Length: 91
Image (cartoon, rainbow, N blue to C red; front, side):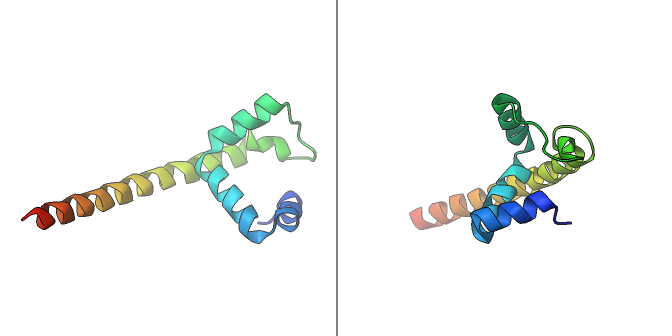
């Protein structure tokens, strides 16, 4: 579901930049929370605080955890293939 804040962000940054930023923050939710704490940012509308704790925070943590597992698996696969290719080139 696209919130009002997301719609504004997409218009302000442009779709490609907005998607890159939101994708990064979904993969690194603790960094987003740290930025919010350090900057002293305050929620601007009802429900916005749930990004720090609550339903949205929980969902972001789940997404980040699932991504971490997939990324680690892919990293292992890519590095194994690369290592095998190097070994074959030596032979």
